[in-house]
Amino acid sequence: MIAARFARLSALCALLLGASFAGAAPASAADGACAEGAGVTVVVDFGDLGPQPLIRCAPGTPANGIAALQEAGIDVTGSQKYGLAVACRIDGKPGPDVESCAGMPSATAYWSYWHASAGGVWESSQEGAQTSKPVAGGFEGWAFARPKSANDLPAPPKVAPVRQAATPAPAPAPAEQGGSFPWGLVIGAVVIVVVAGAGIVVARRRRAQ
Image 1 (tube, rainbow, N blue to C red):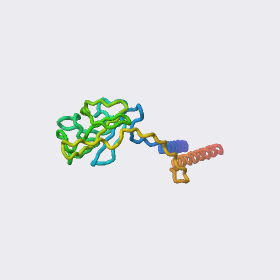
Image 2: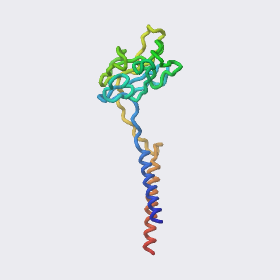
Image 3: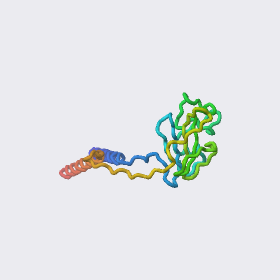
Image 4: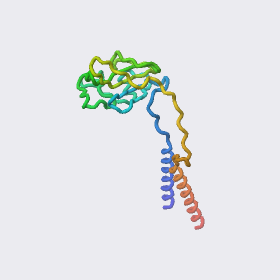
């Protein structure tokens, strides 16, 4: 009976320690432009739809502009009539109150498609996104346009096609300055001490008998 209790306490101790180390794991990397040579950067400017522009990395060299969106983890919906040859919604926008996605988008509310080299300038694509081949290490841009008439040219994404210089992660704040204290690790250590002490007491009682 004592041995079984000791085993259960040891298992609980291991779980607590595991949880404390899991809580100390670093957070996943933030969204942003690809590092040089790592892939194609995709920029989505929602315009007056909001929210802030998306900047994501599609690893390698995607097969086309639609693949770049998908491989960057950005959802794209085509039209019912033309499929993904026409990008109707990106990341769920615009909603059905603006576009039904039945056929071609409205000439005064649609996604414009752009290309740029790193550090270059945005250029309007002369091909559809399903046939256009992204340039290795370049930028793919999408901007939601609301021109006043079909003759007005859309504006490019407001985000410049430039890789931001990497900034070092801030050093963790000391505990006395409000930093995160590893309570899980401390609790796990205390449990180890308690279990070890209980084991010593049990062993001494057996010897005394």
